[in-house]
Image (cartoon, rainbow, N blue to C red; front, side, top):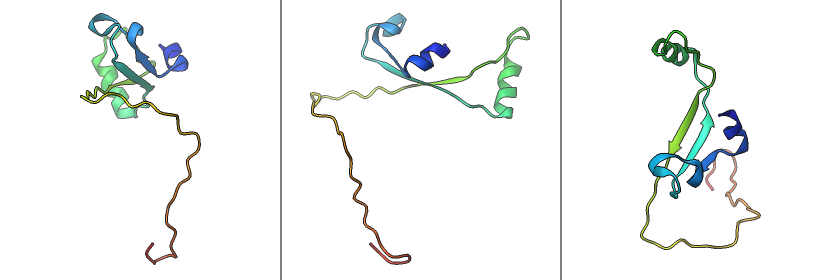
Length: 91
């Protein structure tokens, strides 16, 4: 599992199993840092022979659209345009 995190955080298409295999669905995976309270609750729910070593979070975002995808050149440089003002003043 850690190799998956290292190789890429998005899992999609042929890497999925079951009804999602070969679909356009993408899963975003990341390591999740748990606090002591959360870790204790998870360990209480595990069988005594189990041991929690790594926790992860998987997010599925499905956004469907009736519009055709728009393709274009990638953004290479961004120049932020934020108005500056004196402290306490307005922009």
